[in-house]
Amino acid sequence: MKRQTNHLVQRACAQHNALKRLRIEGSFKPLDTKTHSFQPLNQHALRYYVDQKPKVEDIQSNVTLDFENAYTKIDDYYKLFSSFVYINSCQWVGRIGGRVLDTKNSFITKVAAHFARPTYFQHFCGGESLIECGKTLDELRKYDIEGYLDYSVEGENTEDGLDHATQQFVECAAYSAEKKVPFVQIKITSLVNLKVLEKFSDILLHPKGLENVPENMRLPGDYDGNELRGHYSQEAIVGDLDVFNMDKLNEDEQQLVNKGMERLEAICKECERGNVRLLIDAEQSEFQPAIDHMTLLLMLKYNKKQPLIYNTYQHYLRETLGRVKADYLYLKEHGCAMGVKFVRGAYIVHEAKRAAQESIPYPIHKTIQDTHDAYNASVEYFMNELNSSSNNLALFLGTHNQYTIEKACSMLSKEQISDTNLPNYFYIAQLYGMGDSLTHAVATAGIPVIKCIPYGPVEAVLPYLSRRLIENSDMMSGVSVELSRLSRAINNLKTKKRKQATL
Image (cartoon, rainbow, N blue to C red; front, side, top):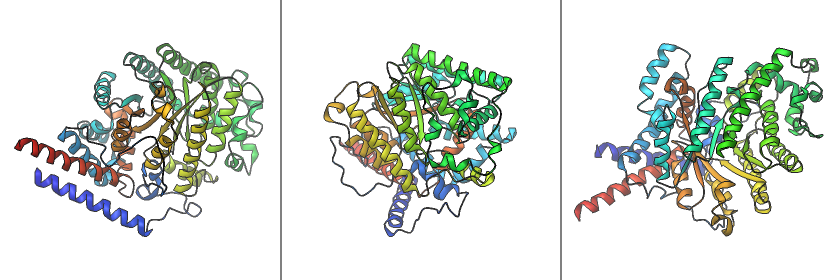
């Protein structure tokens, strides 16, 4: 075992040094999206989410973040070694296994679930039930890390399936209140018929779409969020406008939308009752206009006193920076608080395929750096607003990018860092099983940090799990940095225990 451990550690260090040389020499270049509409998974697409390449900038901060020695509080050799093995093995397992786990074949699904349950499911997910997740939450709190639960079952798009998902979200909100968990996360596509949601989005995207929006779904005032979505939304509406000059939602479709809003209301009321904040996740661009519209309606109702409802903004979309500011100013004008969750984006492969298949403009920034710049610009704008506002804004940064974390923490004042209410309006977040060195470094510095903990029956969570395996198969991303830090922690712990044994 010792020989195997040393071999794995040496391999990770060698990989890390080789990747550093590649970056310094400039031999890795971003893909040109003008001439390439479908990106390969492991070289470019998923680095939007996991890339940790820091900018060269001297950041002055009131916070000390020691990422290289982030695991000093962990005294469990098995915990460190198993994390190293699972993440390191993703570079081989992820490329094939990630696609196998996302299969529709029932027999393969059962076999894959049997294999995944004691291995990768255990590493990337909190459990199959809320009770199992409770143990995961308790374990994280030993290291001053919070967690929030995400029922990650996909594909339940029948009315019965949507009702079942709603019940799961309501139970999750109630359990989160019991465990004093600050957030719960949902996807609106788990609550509303997909075809109707897409049609509603198309109606909203049309320049005269408000005329066809049902009266009970209209936003007050003159604000049309989709008019300010940026030039991409207008570019998409080209060619045959008759495609977009559709009728209003018919009676059956309107009932399905109303039913979706009823499901959302049930979850919101449970969150309000238990003082649990609700994160509404971002999704594919064909659904996002309707999701944003419905979320704004909920914010106008539930965010009058505090930011209970949070919307998620994906910064790989060219429209995001302008739209999030417009949403913020609109809510501020109507006397409502705003909760914002920032991510880089998770559906780049889907968006590339859709743009090619439907001959619409590519909605995503041309380079990774453009996405980083948009994300960091939003962070800077809203951190400044956070420093000047009172009780009308809360910021939730979902990021595995070290530079972004350093930049955001540097903008916190000494008063904010020592403020016991800081978790009420500021959090940094990573996915469970990923970017743990970032999470532990932030927690050690005393900044509110939280892990997204997906859960659900193993077979139903396999699509989520497949994406995590594929993301971690990209050794050109921050995964190599994480492995290097884990290997250092393993060696340090071995040395520490050896010294203790000789005393």
